[in-house]
Amino acid sequence: MGILYEQTDLVGWGIWLFVLFALMAFNEFSRTTKWGGLTLFLIVPVVLTIFVWPTTASPGNEYGTGTWFNWVKTYSALAGCLGFMLIRYRPTLLNNKWILLFPPGILALNILEACIRDFQVYFYNVPNGAYIDNLWVMSGPWNLMNGVAGLLNIIAICGWVGIKISKDQSKDMIWPDMIWPWIIAYDLWNFAYVYNCISDHSFYAGFALLLACTIPSFFIKKGAWLQHRAHTLALWIMFVMTVPSFVDRLAPVPSTHNPRAFFIVSLISLISNIALVSYQFYRIRQRNLHPLKDEIYADTKAYQTVLSQNGL
Image (cartoon, rainbow, N blue to C red; front, side, top):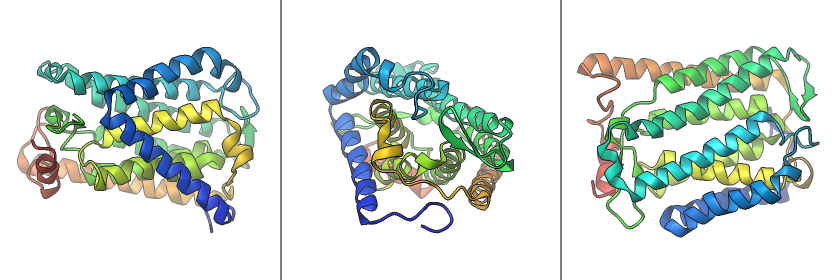
């Protein structure tokens, strides 16, 4: 695995592929059926909250699932899933311009939560690494670099005024302006965040989880990245909260704990998000656009492809 992870065998890669395809399959199930979405993101979490998570995700447990961040991330991801379903199946809500603020708002909140966590790990001041709340972390400049990259990624969220509902049976929430430059910059930032803050879980929670929403965004249902991301993130967190031993005991693939690896992934994240924000500001100035009122990429082929493939 080189600089990022310790070696894993074919069984390890098989488990990784199973996680990837299971996330994609459950995402499709929840995306294409209303009852599937309600079951996975409302009924199941209520049952788990009452009967399972108080034990498997209790504060201070040996797997680190009882931290404030896990609980906040779980319910913010679920809030996104349910909020997006409400918009999808009540499309007249989009006539209220304030409703359009919900998708970028919940997205920005999730990114901000991760930025705060990166900064928190930096201020733990454990440059040689340590277990804190039963999670291994290593403080360093990479935390600050990636925290700043995340804030830049928030600044680059654009074009939510153009959010629409697809005309097909699945009624997906389509965000045409959220095309590949932002998605790739987000993926690089989020992988660096996961690598920095839950390093020994990042083989799944970073590598597999990000591909589980990026692959559908490029090859299955274009324009619905945020919906894919909310679904797969909620599914993964619910699984980890329920079976916390999976990553640490059942199928562990630890990182190398190499400071150079932390620095490299965070540097790539920071450079990509600086480039993204710079490019968007260039387009805004060149085309005399308003970043809060206009779509930034409406004249691009990628944008037009999203519209055509969703009957818009």
